[in-house]
Length: 172
Image (tube, rainbow, N blue to C red):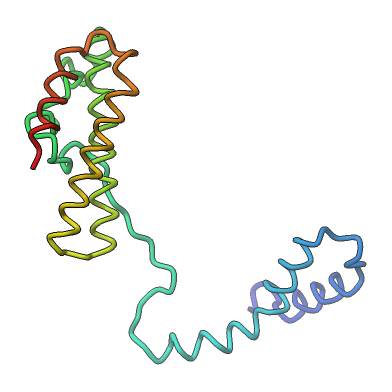
């Protein structure tokens, strides 16, 4: 507060806001100033005592989830980093082979979908057998739709797509 001369800065902001014609503002801008600036003391009075009295940690915590082939397990042998073909030659092998790029692109989409379903299910924390069955059904449907959408664009991946379709059909 002392370093930025907070009292003077607050007075300057009050003078600035009082000297402008809110009628010339966009309605959303008026609302943002009203809620964010003028409403701050009210929100502060309401939330700070509640937060200070609890050991709840940060009010707006950030969670990080990894989307990695190492964490996607639903596709069996087509899961994990060993399923990627572009990792050879110092991770540049896919630059020299369209078939490798197609393989890794398709598996990337499938691995990401697998992880996203897992993340949503973990966040819901239902843990029931019924929810596991629903998650498996979502995965099968999503995997199939991804294959349907990409198949015509990936001519070098026909055998991979056929193997994935068989695996998806066998998922239980």
